[in-house]
Image 1 (tube, rainbow, N blue to C red):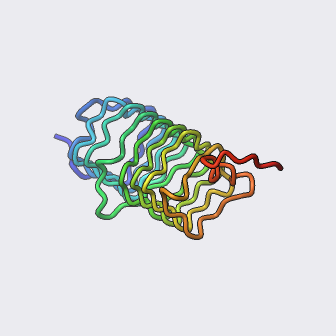
Image 2: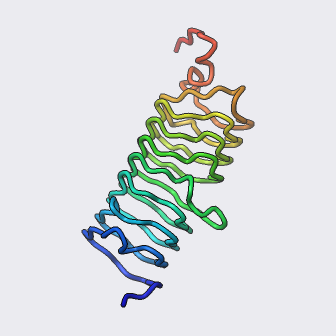
Length: 191
């Protein structure tokens, strides 16, 4: 019988079976090139963990706790984070593929998205206060009823955000990003 609490372990090139992580707590663990596509994330906690080059494509991430977790070069295509535990959590992404991911109605304050592809990501109803979008492709990302006060979009690109449908007080944008804010007005903005 395996333990429900795993501490200070490292996993490399592991393909996790559907029930392999169910009801487990991982603390201070490192995951390298692991495949989580078939996993059942029911009542799973990751605390102080890092993930490198892992595949979560289409994974059902329900009732998972993510506390001080970093994902680097991971694939989250078509993953729905809306059911993650929001009590105490913090997770960030660097060089990740997040296309078609859903963060619907989550509180993602101070979240960091660094150099990520985020095509058609759903941020509807999210709190992105002070979030960092550093060099991210936000093509067709949905920002409706989103709170993005003090969020930094200055180096990100290809986004469309309607300032009348989201809160953007003191959010940071570059002059190149202005067309993404003014798109609905059908203005011509020249460099």
